[in-house]
Length: 497
Image (cartoon, rainbow, N blue to C red; front, side):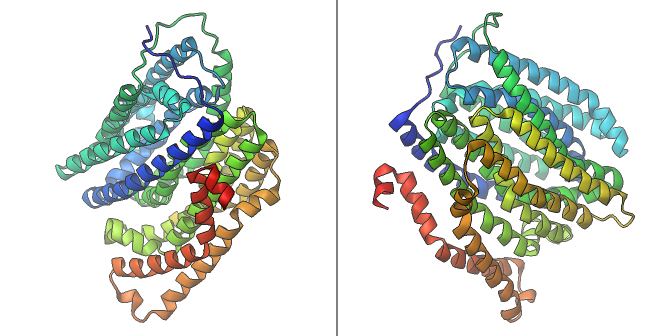
């Protein structure tokens, strides 16, 4: 029996106030969490080396595939609903549990296939253990849905950061004691278990018993379309890792996977909280076109303001970043990181477009767009795999080029769906785009102008280049920062600006 009913969604002034308060809390939590995750990753890279990451990377695509169903479609379907009855919430909880158990068993059954494809028998127990994390991801999903529907976004972000911190600390401790790849498995269980416990504590709602009368077919249909798009994104995101693991081995996959992972770390660090704000906020505002477009424009400007300098800046300083994070053992990944960092410029836009389309109930369109993106990536990878001189750099370049070329039509289809003109989007991102071009020119020039820069320690080189680039960029986007700050402070500040 439920002891607490899901709270009705907020609207009007309460919506704007909750979005502002939640956004500020999310930014604070994620800034802390990102610094912490970089420190944890650096420790694990040094303690473990490429091989354990490569072993986990051979199984991880299967786990991520299963996670599409456990944390994707039904979660989004629940958040974007205008209203969610108690019976519907209970039904979704039990369906999520069933999906978690089935996907865990399915991925565990496929672990021997992964071991056979890669010629590594030790992948069988590793794959079975990682498969169990899929069920763990479902324990707190419905409670997260209700917290986000109430726009208690700061608390959701805080729980996630605490779970990541303790899970990462456990992994570092086990890596220190020689657990190898199993330290990375333990990290997943600790993180997801603590996140679920935190959500239950914040929203102590207990689901009722499963009943046939709950009308959730429309939610399942919506979630199904969203899951299809998730499968297609999974294919686009993991086909290269599967090919490299089979064709080039675990060390190559370890280098490639971690270069990609480091590039995607700021994207994932921003994507989860940002979609956590965007989906409920835009869903609640879908009945008011002016409010909806104002919110969407603010999100576009914020994404551009952050992603453009992160992507271009990391690409220009990739050798220093790799050397500083993972020592000289990971030096070969520097060139790969320089290529993958360019994905940051567009990847967060691509990720949040799913939330934009879901907020207007267009999960079917999202599936179509995902199919087009996956086709472009697969074509590029197939051409690279068939090329006799295939290398890690060739795979990285093909993958990145496919995403960059597919981005504009992908974004254009979204703008058509929400009836936003291109000129409004370009106006929103114009200043960050111009500022990052100047920043890139300054950083590139410093490599030629600073005497003896190449002989300096990686930390010194990175400090000089990153600090100079940041100062230039922040000076050029000061007005944008002021604009974002006024919107976060509230309507009176916006009017004054």
